[in-house]
Length: 200
Image 1: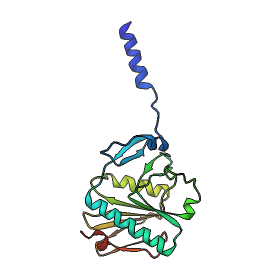
Image 2: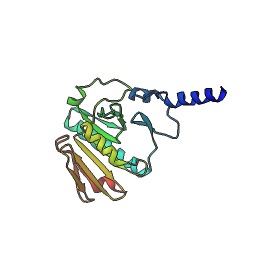
Image 3: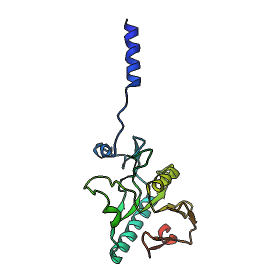
Image 4: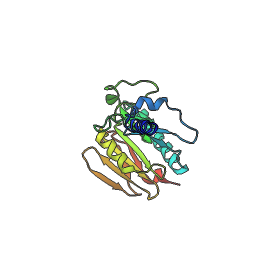
């Protein structure tokens, strides 16, 4: 009888449904000192590690340039650094991604309930990722943003001193070190020369 009970217990534990985490759950989970935070992929936490010196410098430069452009031109919208977005993917509605830098138009923000200390439940109009060893699987991230409705995505590749631009129409463009990033129809008039951004 003891063995039978033990077998039944193991079977029960193995088949007991696990609770899937939601994006709101992520905000309530304490973040250990050695992590920067969490993303949420397929209901599972994905740790976000602190980034290296070059990565951090490029992110600050991007935030500064976007913020100044938006403020000086009076562009309606907001610039964010490392803000979490619930992307609402069909296969994973609660997927949370935190691009290094992002811009969301006032028009997009008006469509959602913006709550303090909560993730934004929308795709950013512009998402920027600085590719590094700390952020593997960049192609999955690209796919997530574009599927969610991001209109423009810049992936900055500091090691190769280049960038890839992804657009909502499915096109992609490789930029070399001598080229410049263009805000296109998301931030018309914004230009950032890659040499300025990547300078050591």
